[in-house]
Image 1 (cartoon, rainbow, N blue to C red):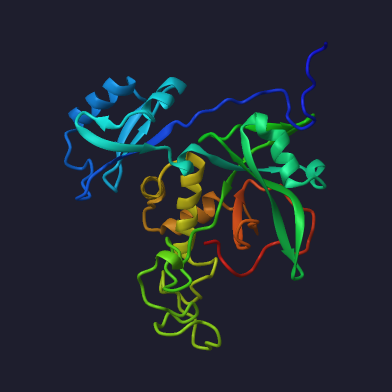
Image 2: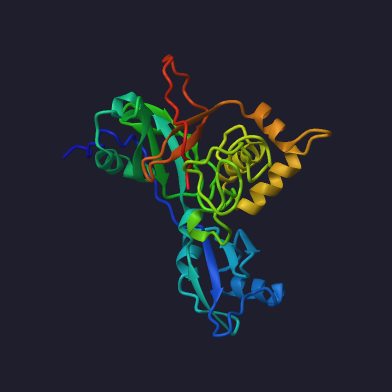
Length: 312
C-alpha cells in the first residue's frame, strides 16, 4: 500500500496542540482567594506539583493564571487538587487557549463551513465562520472567513489544499452597552441607567428622539454610537492590542496608554494616524459589525460597510 493521501484542504502539516493556560481557584465556603497567600508558598506548591512553569500571575479576581511549559505539565496540572494544604479547582480558560484569525480565499466561497472546518482540523482549526457583508439591505456571503484555532498564537498562514492563505488577526469592535451607552460592557452586565444613545439624557431610548446629538462617553456633539467618537477610537485600539498580543483587557489598556500618550494631543488622534486601515464587516455569530485588520483592498465602489449597530 502507498502512503495515505492528504485530505484536499488540509495542506501538509499536522498540528498537535495542548492547553497552555490554566486558572486555579480556591475551594472556599468564605470566597477566599490567593490575594493574601504567600507568593513563595504558591511558587513552591506549583513547582512541587508540576515542575517549573512558564509563568504564574495573580488575576484581579484573586485567582491564579498559570502558563505551563509542556504537554506533560498540561496533563499533570489537571490532576492537582491541593496547592500545599489549600484545596483548589483547576480549569483551562477557553478564551486564552484559543485564537481567532481571518483568511481571504475565493476558492472556498462555494464550500460549507463544516466542510472547511473538517479539512483544516489537521492545522489546528476548530471552527470556521463565513463573514457576510450587508449591501442594499441584503446579507451577501464573502470570501472572508473567521477561523478559530486551538492555540493561543495564530499561525502565519494555513494551506487550503494547494492554496496558501495568510492569517490576519480577527478584531471585534469595542463593546457598547445598549442600555447606558457606555463602552466596555454589554447590556447583560449593565448596572447603569437607561440612557438615550442620541442625546445622552437618562430615562428614555433613542427611538423617536429628535434632541441635539450628544455622546455619553466623550460629551461630544455626536451620537453615542458614532464611529467618529474619540473615546470609541481609543477603545478600538485597546481591543486591537488585546487580540493581536493575546493579553487581558487591563494589560491592553496599559499598553495603549503607554504607547499613545502624546504631548498636547489625544489618544484617539494617535490611534487614527497609526491605524488608518480597518475593514468593517458583518459578524456571522451575532449579526452585528466587526472589524478585521489589514484588509484586502476592494475595487468595488459600492458601500460594503454596515452603518449602524455595534458588536456586543
